[in-house]
Length: 282
Figure (tube, rainbow, N blue to C red):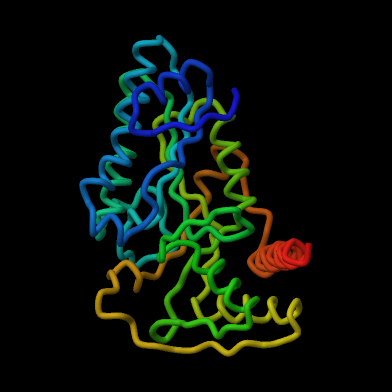
């Protein structure tokens, strides 16, 4: 398949994709909790309309592609028992997570009806080298902290930093999608994709600062601030995922630990800084 630029809310977009593809990795749509809160209808449409068009195209073309959908572990809401297994009932507390849960159900229904062969992956906190220029303020926090540390700016941590998170390296996420696209017999299921290990926000930030210092020679200081009044309750969650189900079903497992992954992130940022500096000198 050749590269194409299209509107994911367009039926013709999905008709073209379904016609050419046996496996579809669907990662498009709104990525921000706060944008979903401010524009819920737009966020809902960007999440559900593409899947509706995808299913319609599959019916009309008589094809049944494997569809691997990018969902989020925050659909579970504010959990208090860890690790969280897929059997835990989702209790979304944001419009963004509710829309993702709707999409999971939409995909599962199309799979039950024999229209698609769908798998949903509930991603934990993803970090690592990226070409993304997303302006979303609530995504990729470790990347943002790393960028600040590389600029020798003091990162900000809200609250006491004791909330638990499960950070998973982008390379392991890519591997998870490939496994989900290739392994037969898992249609209609949802899986957690995470490291399976919890770490506090403060510990994660400190690891980023340590690794950045190895590159810059300077150690920045973490600045603590109270949570903003408009912070969503999902920001205060504790979360550690169980990844046993996905391991058993596909053979996948994460290969990159947090410190090594942050080292790879910092190395990528260092190379990008050098390239930018050389470009400006030309």
